[in-house]
Length: 135
Image (cartoon, rainbow, N blue to C red; front, side, top):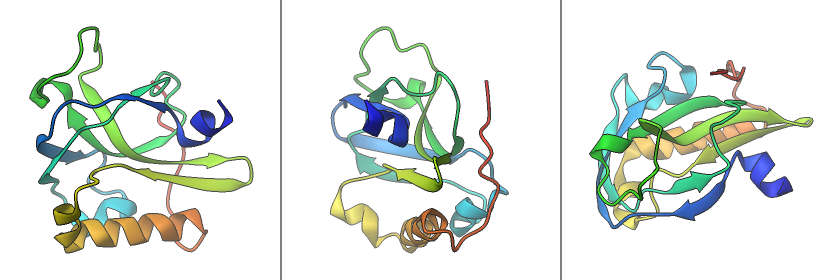
């Protein structure tokens, strides 16, 4: 449970491999600057979480729209599912990022820059607004 609290949720399931359109939560947030104001598409199995999103105690960065995802189990009530966010946890910083686990996605230099920026945020070298967006 502590790990789920740190990350912001725990894995539930994922639908089949499919084309996923990734959207930016805030186009002007410095951590998504690598994407130059637009999202991207890639092939992946989109992760669906348990125990996530209720408190909105994180700053969302990337999301997918549930209406665009094939194979979601019934009972999904949210219209978006976040796939990347940042938050403070204790004295530290968390950068969560799950846009893909397929090797071809990492041919995208913008995604690689985003991940590098997120790591720099986590170690304290990238300063940005990480205040939570409460519902």
